[in-house]
Length: 80
Image (cartoon, rainbow, N blue to C red; front, side, top):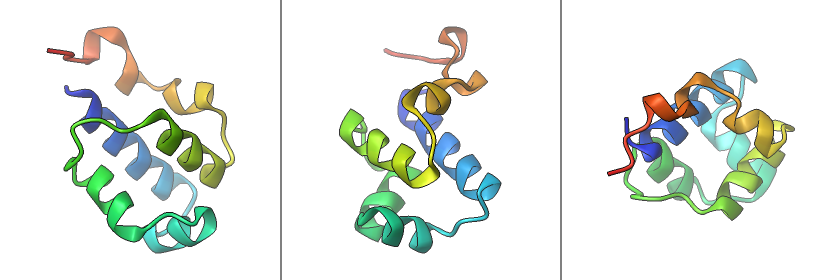
């Protein structure tokens, strides 16, 4: 899978796990809702590390915790 899909799925799963809406997360981290929707809908070809750090802050997790998911195992990612 493409990395942008892995990021989109990870964010979606964390929203569910934390019982947060997209709106609530955006308010919490001062991110435009359109930005988060674009990430989840995979409209961005890449997601900046700064943006992922901001999302981690919203979920109260570290970068290590964000990427510590089977979605990001090398064999699951297509980086062509």
